[in-house]
Length: 280
Ligand code: AMP
Ligand code: MN
Ligand code: MN
Ligand code: MN
Image (tube, rainbow, N blue to C red; front, side, top):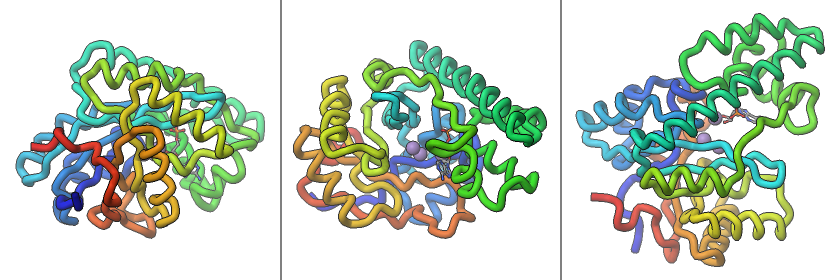
């Protein structure tokens, strides 16, 4: 069946590394025509109450979500939890653990920056002063503001990205454990941006097999501005592994050059929507 609704199941607010407060994000999405919206902050559900309140006022259906960082064979893999119960006690404990892992990693990264001659302690203080979970995006923004790099991309290219001197692998829990948290909290686990991971074809198949075996039920088939060939590949992978399809912008900031809110491609025909049986 053709996708009728304007749906976006992957967005960020200030509770992680998004630019907008949760209510402002909902308003902006509503103005852009989004009818069903998931707030999926990195390892945090702190914005869901505010988002839900504003969604009620704006006529948007809010899907309670989260984007959890996990590890699979030394890679960081992001798993979206959709329709989770944010009050689930085990999930709350798990996300508190994620926040601790983020804080530990941030201190290690900043210590490395100090070793490289940058003001690591001052940068750490800036990141720790912001209210949401600590992400590398916050650190990158602080480094740009301090004149240590020209842009966020520049920071990742020089310091924080794969193989760079201040790259610290966080001690994320395995993907099977993370999928388990989501399912136990009543949610649906969807693998975020599956085309973005650096994997061989056989590595990707193994990841998808492990994800499905763990109880994962969907792939993000339409992910932000991903090109048509990625959408087709993701649709094929979903079919091969018996997974449903999701649609998400990964929206962070209206200032970025392409604003995907309300303008995502539709889920291709033949892919079972992750929202089937879930939308009222
Ligand atoms: P973290 O979850 O703490 O590892 O932070 C990674 C976040 O940094 C991602 O969710 C992106 O939003 C952001 N980011 C921005 N630019 C880049 C980049 N060039 N490489 C990786 N992450 C980036
Ligand atoms: Mn992010
Ligand atoms: Mn992600
Ligand atoms: Mn995201």
